[in-house]
Amino acid sequence: MSTELLDSANFKQQIREQAHTNRNAQENKDELSREIVARCMGLPEYQSAKTVLFYLDVRSEVRTRNDLTTALASGKKIVVPYCVDGELELFHLTSPDELSIGMYRILEPKPELRTVDAHKVDVKEIDLIIVPGVAFDREGGRTGHGKGYYDKLLEHARPDTPLVALAFECQLFDKIPMQEHDVFMDKVITEKAVYNGRGRC
Image (tube, rainbow, N blue to C red; front, side, top):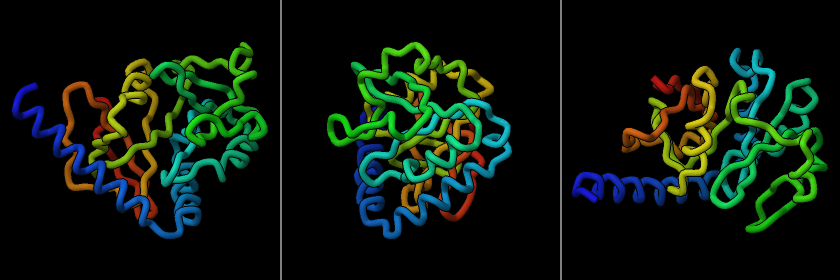
């Protein structure tokens, strides 16, 4: 690894650690999460999407689980991810009852339902992807946990599918180091604003 890449990786790790600290200390997470998700649902891109991928929040992420019932009642096809051998698989969710607490206390589709054909979804079907992350900048730069789950998934998404990240304002930094393969978000939504990102230009 070159010195430049090493410096970038170290800087990214410092940002991740600071973002985790900031996010863990964030007060009123439920209340702010509802504001952020409501702002997302108010977007024209969300309104026009027929199939939407929601992430299922873990630990101190912006919480989406509180709004899944509202999303399901809207008539849209709601899809959630789960991890298998380092890859994200997609599941058509029709009821919150189809979720259970799995390994690492993560909310995920019940294992016995994952093999049912009616629940399987290809990423090309998704009209809007709601993306989690550890830290962002206002241009849509993003860093996750460093395992690349979403990077792999987004490589196969349709080019016209908007990528919308949800974050608390405390997760925003001036500049996230981005490499050639990294994907910029189209929008980053916080409790304070909707930031227009560079997207996949």
